[in-house]
Length: 387
Ligand code: PHB
Image 1: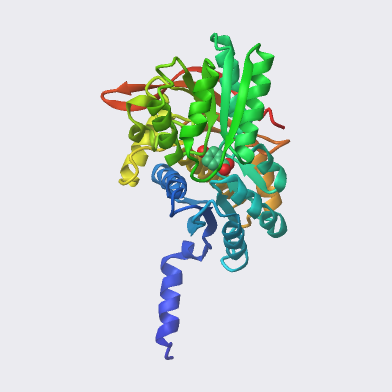
Image 2 (image 1 turned 60 degrees about the vertical axis):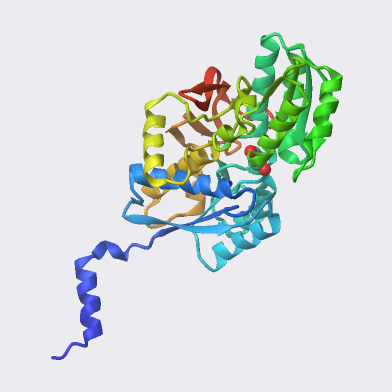
């Protein structure tokens, strides 16, 4: 009998590696990977790589395959189109990523229509998780990190605050939550300003704040180069010398840009869910894996840990569901998930599919000549008070 060569090869391959029959689990990672917010996507992907380094990339015999898609954003239209292509053409099992709220909001109906679990690794406006029953969030909500800053400030003798936020949903959430919590605690928001999301010129706003003579300015702008521009204007206009303190969400002192901000940022107090300086065995392991697989990204920031935890969540689902990733069963698993994250303990609230976590109060300090957000106080088990 003559067996065709091709058939023989196929037979041999099948016999040698039977596990190869298992289809990979496909995860579409939608985030900016170029442009001014390129670090958002790079951090998330860096977190995923660190997860694979520590735990492998195959669960229940199925390898996890990441399909990276660049929104060049913030760009909601592109995010939506990429999400659509990922579900229809690439047949992904999960959508993941989403740095900016408007991108997550644009993709949410795609997740609903296609019944694909959508793992949010950053987008942090309160409303995000309400936009699809297939969304679970592994990052933060702006009100969740802003309210503790207000409570801490009031408890520590700060009475008059001026707020400055980026003029889009996360900024407005942050301003609203800060005001509510600060007023309840006996403080007063003397004035508020909202600045454009893209390329704000901070100097005139900072001058107005100086003229109003508050004790502190509370601020939120999306992580990245705006932080550097804000601190530069703050320094140049002499606000610190005028006795005005900066308090902010940790987006301002994001670990990725912290050292580029230089000494003007020393002593700035922020509230957030992750610092690279977090002292725990889980974070030590994470930092070590990070350094091995992300040579060009010095440290993880909160989007890096969002990528790590989002991938941990996907791995839990794959371990339990194996060959058949049923979307509704996947959501049941995600809704009841509890993980020991590098940031501390995290859980998903089954009612909202949003994260419950510790919010830390941190101060920028220099350790061996390098700037870090050093945690010194904390609010455990914080939910999004915006819901
Ligand atoms: C958002 O658009 O939801 C967003 C972006 C950057 C941040 C925080 C929130 O640092």
